[in-house]
Amino acid sequence: MTYLAIFFLNAGLTVPIVFFSVGLPTLMREAGLPLELIGLTALVYLPYALAFLWAPFVDRRSLNGLGLRRSWLFVVPCLMAMVSALGAAVAPEDSALGVLGIALFVTFLGATARTALLGYVTENLSPDRRPWGAVILPAGGAVGALIGASGLLFIHSQTNWRSTMLIAAATIALSAVTALAASERNPPRAGEGHAPPSLKRFFSRGDARRVLGFIAPLGVGMGLVFGMLQPQLVDIGFTLEGIGLINGVFICAALFTGGPLAAYLTGRFGLATLLPYGLAVVCAVLLYAAAASHWGFGPLFSVLAVLLFYLSISFVSVATNTLFMNQAASGQEGTDFTAFICANWLASLVGIAVSGLVAGEFGYAAVFLLGALCVLGSLPMTGRLPVQWQKSSISM
Image (tube, rainbow, N blue to C red; front, side, top):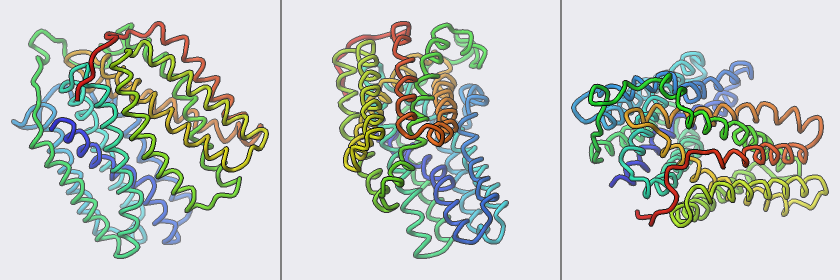
């Protein structure tokens, strides 16, 4: 039941952030709203990038008698569903700023619930089960993204804004019910031999700082590549429908092949072995992508580069998320896991912001080469990572 709870909860929490970041700009443009206003939808990412600031509060107290994690994972999604249902009364063409305000509040609630979910995953999965948790978590997110980006847009095309928002609210509410059926461990909290959760406690730990140092170049490198993968496909002649199909198929293929393989190999050989090899594979893929772009190997070789990139990233993501879980300190698991995720997100945003400048000046091949060099820069740091466990027999 733990894996199912993780899957459905993350799916429900992902629906609104993807809908408001991908679907809403589309609907606003269709309504004839100005690009300057549409650009403000990027603000919905802010709560997810800054959630570490209020994560200690989520780690400290329960909202009701359901348990520390389950209380947040039930109450907050229910609030998200209520606000989304209220948002059905305000269409973008009637009050764009009102819709943006609702979107920002819903994503703030979603980012808050995500902290509770990350704490739940860390506390309720033993170290030998965490790699599989690192597979299930993004798999649920992928389903939520499919609903938010494609499903809700299709519903809107067949109905209207009101129906779309009500269905989104129902989807979020259904995921909240999963929290009621989930079991939860109750580890000791502050006042029971543990210091209260805090960011000061997180940043004071040398092992956390080493993990952050490892994340920085890796996140920037991944952001560089993510920022230019889709524009390159457009420039070599693929239609938007074709790119959507490529991304959908390849992401699913990566999740259901690279992810489980990484989980198995993590248990077989340990993180200390898997991480360096995984990063080396990513570097090799990016060097291939740079060569394919520079020498013009052709569309099929570029598509192959996209597939290999998604596979290698899904592989490394399982290892890094397992590392984040293992390095989350007892008593503030949600705070630490959230801080690691936010650091990775912020580093990726830096890479995305820079990618267009590099591609515009030097071409796509330079972007992929620079991304490979950034990933390579994180490779020597794996030897200093505080890997707490090496091998185990993975069990689901």
